[in-house]
Length: 338
Image (tube, rainbow, N blue to C red; front, side):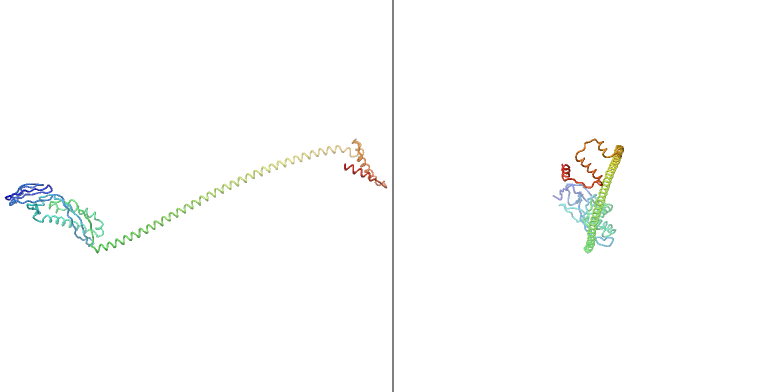
């Protein structure tokens, strides 16, 4: 009304009220009346903002790469921002210029300059594999740069989403990488086969060692059996020797006994012979008739007939004829048979 307007801002905005080129009011989240014909308002956003970027740079080996990522920044000094950019707004709070976009361009420009100095020191392969290192170094360079301090902003974080070579080089690297992967696969197959062969060799060696151990154990068992058999045979031999020695001893004792018995019997026979000779010697010169008479035993008919026949035989030369009746012979035979 009559050029007077009322405006209100939130706490994420830093507001400057200018009148006749002089700052009349400033601060976060202000609300006030102002006279529009002689006043202007500039608004600086205080909340952190994300700015996406993608640009192309050249590596040490003259290969083009695309660097893509996101940078997060925040206004640190609103006065410096106002000194460098036109952030005036109309009564509806809309920016009257596109300087807010220039801020992002300046941030990306400085970021690209820092990234270029890093990539020019790296070869393509290293640049593609050192994304985290590049991101850390880039943040350090940006933090040390005075450009952002002059703009009154602070870089909070840089996220690199990727570094990509041009399509032709990407295909070449892909083919090379494919070959390397194929080699790695072949090497892995070779190592797996080699490992399998090595395992098989170890198994064979283990089996051979087991067989050798079994053979040695069997040999030990055979030797033990042989030793046992030798001991057994030795014991058998000793037992037989003892038996033989016992039999020899018994035989010796038997022989000694027999010899002793023979000697004793011989002595007894000699004694009997001596006694007999001593008994017979006086009778040697006597006639048998005298001996029979000395005997004193009565003679039976048969004995008498035998003596008779003896006398006949002794005087056979003197006998001319001798008749012996059958009855006499029969009586002798019958008596003898009886």
